[in-house]
Length: 546
Image 1 (cartoon, rainbow, N blue to C red):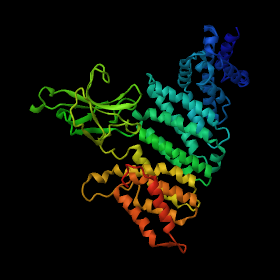
Image 2: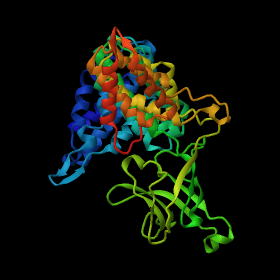
Image 3: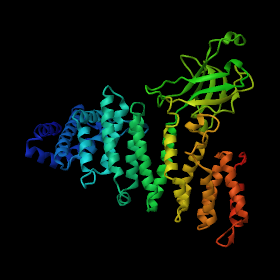
């Protein structure tokens, strides 16, 4: 009877909540306690009747919170039930997650599908729309929800967006509304606000937002790009702070941002295979894994490229055969690339006819490597081929508007490199963390820009690492303000030299050589040159031609 009374009391409170002071008083006094007890129930330890009562209570609680959010959004008052909403959405609670079935079975007994029903009921009650209005009206006020509450809300709506149900469009719109409101709040935080805020909670919010907008990239690309613009702005605020802990936190975010942008790197439009001992294997392999309506590769799936053997006399009985360049996960969990006549029903199995393979290292798994291919003895013929990528799979005119290009442009226009290395209070930990950005900018030197498509006389790419950055870094070393900082900069320069094209590396080495005849503050720079050369000699790997 107690279980049923919980449902009956919440049902009555929901019915009269907007018109009865007694109903509101009851909810304010008891709802948080009730829901906290209910979500801590382990489904396997209670009966079906009790499980149904918990579910019904959670559904009613979300309707009550949605009602109050609408009321408070109109009145400008405080919704005191957001902690209850957080409990209803918290996927770590026992009722959703459950407990392990036994000591030797890693099987959970929770009811995660109930949580998704609770989220959907809140959405159908216009709860997320009301929450967005509430958040916007409370930015800058003490009544703005705490980050742990926002975490559970964002996590819930992100999980709902991932479900891709028939209501996907409505869920996406709600996710964008709430996400934008949270981003607007974070964007208003001052240096002092950020200092008081636990960095781990801010990281959780950032990851929740990233999870949502990464899911939406195939259907709401412009919204995803707006999120990454927000992320870059937040990072700039952090790394420009006068607080060293905030700056270090910001540089940790830079590394995460670079990785996230790389995950969205569009695949090549095609690969040209040449030099294979099996002549019919040579040719153009076009991206064939499917695209989104706006012309980008579908995210999340395996990518592969196909080639149809052309009608030429020298190919004899191979004419018309469809060959595939694809990635296969081996029993060792390594991902190798193959050039094969893949079986249509069971690709990646023993039924394939494999001609060539590449035993890829971890850094080569995302896309086929240009060299290092091996002949498969069952059907291949030496020599193995080489591969060359051509183009990127994006709509025409968007080749240089990828998230990586946007990030490089942001770094150059905001003079991030100069900010790191030119600061008179430069800290070696900041230099160490900045290596990931400078390495990224060096890699962008080989990615070109729109003007490079024009032909001779095109301007060089300005949204990447420049020779002036490297020379600037060297001058930082010669200032010798801090030996630990100088050593860290030496290591940075040496680590990126192998990535630099000649037009960047040569000016740096010439600047170092020119320092042999120079003085700084009435002292010769020979020790600095010697230290740099020492780090260069000991820091280069054996197969690097520097």
